[in-house]
Length: 441
Image (cartoon, rainbow, N blue to C red; front, side, top):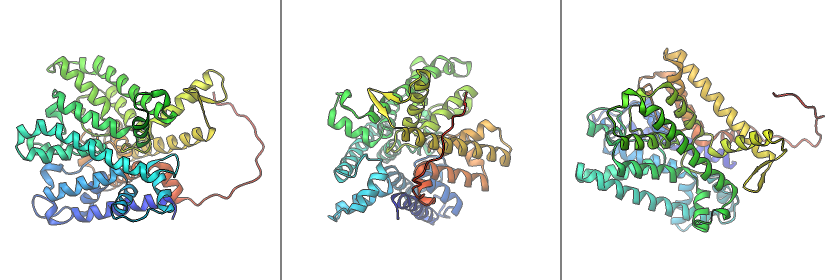
């Protein structure tokens, strides 16, 4: 059992267990229990920290069902292997070399050494950050909802930090699938949720650099530098686009300037890969929807709670393009040189993500008879484990839902993890083929 196969099977078993729990009568408000396929879709979305739903979380699921969902989100965000190691540590069990090896693969750690200490730090930081987020959200929700606001605050703090996008606002609004549209101008809710999303999506390795080196950015490892710079650009540039183009259109005239600034930032942050929205996404122009599709595909950082093909992959392709333009052989950044293997891995990841995203979107468009852009928005949301939707997912049937389930699973476990788990190891070939150049431009 390689680490890739352990991760693959662990997520599959967790999804199955969650689906069985959600089929119990106690899990739904009507006491009838959910159908297996509704439960399977919801369990996959929660475990893969996506946020796509076929039933409104607050209107359909009971308190027990919501507790199952948030537990799946927490385990899925932390990683099945991380949770298993954490339980072993709490039980006082010695963590063997194989467990450390699997843990390294699970959180994308650079080495096995210090993996237990790193895991301890991840768990502690996660609980502290989620707790702080819950306290801040409770300051808004408790005055509005009473004691029930505590549960809402905890639920949304965990869902935000794990980049899941599940919400309970349907019961308050009296309508399904409203997300956080009722708080579009609320700085406390917006900034708290955005902060949790960004921190959860920058990756555990970056956390370690922040803890060790504080504000001495030059001491950070190259991955952390690329993650922070690319993340900042992918937040600020789309936010400027939304503010200067989208929210100047007539359909948004009722919003104040402050609401437009918050909405621009929020709609730039949430595709990376949280799934909340504070405006009606169906009212966005096709240009803005396309920008969100690109952001959803990119996602967050490796070894984080976010999905997508990762900001480091996007950064590697930018560096490769820059190297070509400058006629350089090597990919260089921050005074460091990247190995060729990094570009090969990034190429394989990008090809898999884009290929599955397009194939899934075209299949859903053909089967359901819906516009291609709407279908691609849903498949980008699924494979990027985002959860944003144009309202199409609850209307899908049979095969289309199974396509989204597969894409969510693929997006969470990771393309290379899935390939390494399924395909056998190739034997080393001592001889090399003759080399010949081709033109690519």
